[in-house]
Image (cartoon, rainbow, N blue to C red):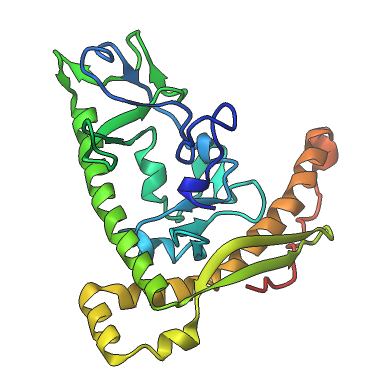
Length: 288
């Protein structure tokens, strides 16, 4: 369920790409001199049930989504749906009042690790763009230029600033995840739900903080986590787990609305007048 576990592009031997990205390439002032970026929506996120988040946005994200940790690297992720569908997207737009994660807002830009000759670990990062995005144009007059007179345009400079901030937060996020693992606070969980149409859904492959273990942390660790800002992040995570019920309710409503919309499309307007408003759908509680 993490960025690192996104499906590989091409064949099984191809390098894995981050979630959403199809052809990530470093920006170059000569190679991409005429390239432009046009306006677009978030349709690229329509079929994803999760997205990685960083600690700096945990408080905001927790108001809308359940926040859990991926198995393995303990990357924090916001759960967007119970199936292969983003329940917070409506016609390519994020629904009003729902927080839009930074990972989504930075797309189609991103960072690629750079390597120096003879070294195996990354020595830096270069601003990159998903050349497979429908928003990226290789020529023409539409959209906004990526480069002007051989220099990064205001759009590209803004993207670089955003990605730099995101990368710094990502490092803090991994430090937080490691601290949780070091204290053995993460436990595997599974969320099961029964939908109004009788289907049963199960969401697994994630971890949550064991609240009982968290309450028993040694005093020196509590002090250290207070100074590092880790304590409120844990509380935000724990509080966000109540959002699983909200998520299930959204799933139930989407199931109820779909057949009604199809029926309305097949009925003449005159015949539809006077129809009673549909009753709200209810579903069984999620167990997480």
